[in-house]
Amino acid sequence: MNDSFEGALDQLPCAARERLARFAADFEDIDARDYALFATVPEDASALHRAMARADAALAEGPRRDAVRAAVAKFESAAALGYSQRMSLSDTFLLFNSLADRADDRVRLVASLERAIVALVLWDELDADDLGALLGPWAEVTERAIRENDAEPA
Image 1: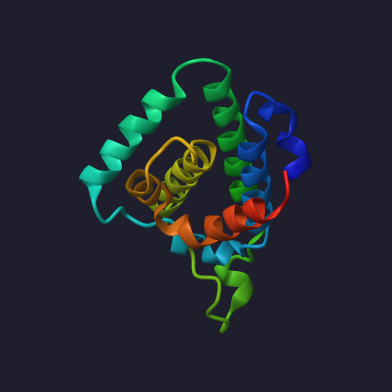
Image 2: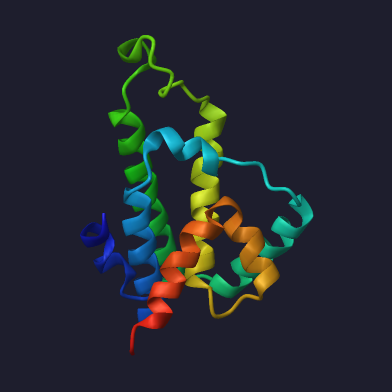
């Protein structure tokens, strides 16, 4: 997935591109059976709405917003591919590791992915509360991407 969306991200700062690339690598390692863990309902909806409004204002219209849209589309495609490659429940008779999720789980997954991507792009522009609200269940996954990015010399 990393190579396929690199060109679309040219309008983003290098640090944002690096964070997204590391997040993409970690995302590829997540088994589609675990996607439901990231399809959560936000605990504090009002904090999330405030964070989304601030992020929307920070993105504004233009090339950076377009780059975020391109990244979101690539992650959505990767998630759809992950879902399609899962064994179906009928293929796993007596194996309880592939229970079907619901359509609204998939919608929540894509929404949480979109918020995480926006948070990674705006990492240096939003405060910790807004980042936390946007990252939601992706906080642990993104922590590694940020830590690895910050550890590398510029």
